[in-house]
Image (cartoon, rainbow, N blue to C red; front, side, top):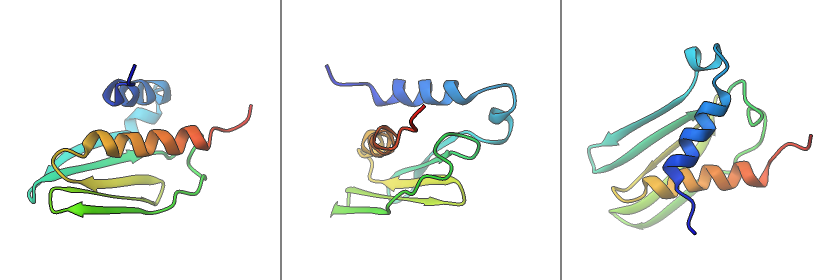
Length: 102
């Protein structure tokens, strides 16, 4: 069964809420006027704050594209009108591939 990326994002956010983190950091999702999506996932104070993230640029056509980068402790993604789930999946896969060893 395919994992629901929105559910994963909500669970990730909730797992970082500790009564303090959520007052300064979190998730931002906005629409773009070209059209598309903008996603910010602030990872300051999380296990992934100091993990390298390789810039991603996928430009398939004017409505099917994704750009992701890490800047100042934030994962920043933008993509086409049907690429929001793909952007979340990119972040999830990066976290899965870089899980800290306990």
